Image (cartoon, rainbow, N blue to C red; front, top):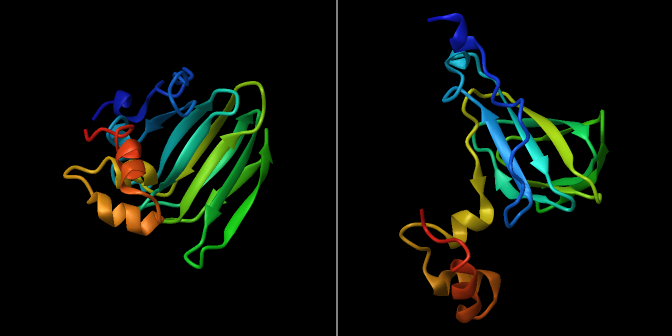
Length: 166
């Protein structure tokens, strides 16, 4: 081990938000910062373009706490009883997303926004909901998704085309 195993500047530079969702997540987890091994913590930076979204997702191995560095966000999570807890969070404020619950963030302003996310896991994992359902490999059967969302199979196929399997 060296001091460099406990150092990273990966969060110093804003992420590229020029994508379909208008956000970028930059993680400093055990894969990028070996000194976190066995410590049970990690951190990420999330940058948002105006009106950008960090789409609904889940962290199966961690609770997340965000601290808004810049701008303001509409945030929310959905409980297992399908209740939405949502509010606006502004610069200098924090919000907690409990482990394993679907949650999202959206920049609610015309300027950029940024948050620092802390996790109680050195590798929290992230599972984007739409990508998991519409971009799985092998694919989730179209009829299962059509019936689940109560939509036409053609619409399921159109959505799947936006999430090519990796």
